[in-house]
Image (tube, rainbow, N blue to C red):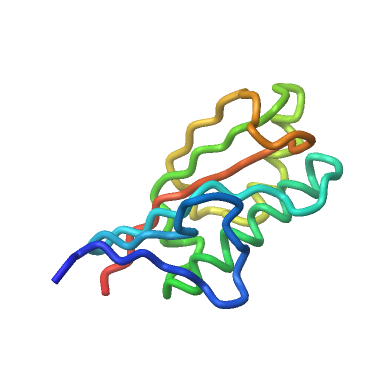
Length: 122
C-alpha cells in the first residue's frame, strides 16, 4: 500500500496543468502553488490565493494552523508589504516558516502564487 495519496478535491480549485492540487505523504500535506482566478490588486489576489489554499487544506482535513512552511512568489517586490498585510490576516499568530521570492510566472497577468506544506497526523 502506497503512503503517498494524490488528492483531487470536488469543488476545489481545478489544476491548470498535469499535477495534483495536494499530495499527502504520511503525515505531511503538500499543497501545489495556488494562483488567483481573477487578476486584481495584490491584496485581492493574495486573499483569493489564501482562500484557495485554505479550501484545499480543509479538503485534506487540515487548517492553516497546520501549515509548517509556505513559499510565496511575487511578480514584483513592491507588492511585498501589501501581500504581507493580507497574509498576516490569514495566519495570525500561527506563522509558518516562509520563503518569499520575486519571480516571473508561466501564466501572464498574475501577481502572486503560494504553495504550502502542512503537518497533520492522520
